[in-house]
Length: 232
Image (cartoon, rainbow, N blue to C red):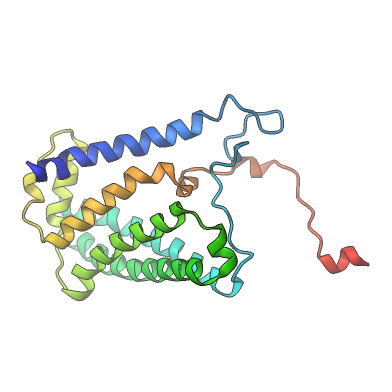
């Protein structure tokens, strides 16, 4: 019963919250105006902001940000390819997922760890950090550790052949948890915590990932000046 909820009920709940939460946060801002007009990419209440921390600890922000973003991109590509390969029994795609996913996971975990270290050790950054900032990092670290442990430590591969068909059954609205019940516990925990992250995603600052600042294409240039030039 509990596994049916975790691998049938929870995925649909997470999907509903993720899509519904994004749409709510997007359209709930329409009634307010920003500088006299509707603006999808720069909401007047700034709820989509990532709260930039680049002013503090500049020597470490670059490494943390680059590893997180590139790791996330590689993981996204690898997981999509791996799911397709597992669903259609395509070994080459599963192998691609194995190596690219492992490399992306290592980059991502390093970036997350560095980002958490920054928030814990830089006084100014620690003062401006919220519960959400820590919760996101800790949750993503848990998801990544479970994913890497099975592949990089235990050297167990091929779970895509079970997860791919399970995901396919969910997408075709014919859910079957039997596909995934036999996989190792670590992989189950990886899936469960990933679903929890997807459900939490639209209510965090990470929601900026689904927006595109299209108005940047026609907005006026912003003139920047160095402080030294202003003092002359």
